[in-house]
Image 1 (tube, rainbow, N blue to C red):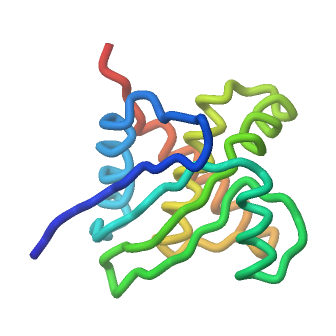
Image 2: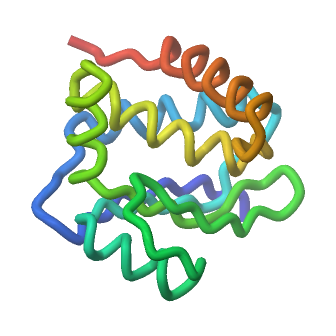
Amino acid sequence: MNEEIINFYSENVFELEHSSQFETWIKEVIASEGKKVGEISFIFCDDEYLLEINQQYLDHDTYTDIISFDNSVGNILNGDIFISTERVAENASEYGVTFEEEIKRVIVHGVLHFCGYKDKSKEEAQLMRTKEEEKMKMFHVEQ
């Protein structure tokens, strides 16, 4: 039983375009870190949905763009990654990047957490940002 499963779900109106390219990219990112895909689910939602999860499970009363629940076992990555598309849109506007670029950054951010990268300290956050940039360059959309 060596199935690699990447799911994309939506709890709002958002629909991820080019999902098969995203799936390929995510698998390449994971392989590039010497890890394997078990089952990873991305759940796209709005701010209120993610706020509720933040309050209920993490005891944080703040809006956030991503929450990941890592159920990985050894080198096999498993878990759920919740992404607020509202927050992603707002951040994209704030950072002067496209929504597409910001959604890629947030998706790969969650994957990198599963690969063992943290972002609590300044140094960790800096390494995470470097890794995000590196992995985003691996994304290709077939025209």
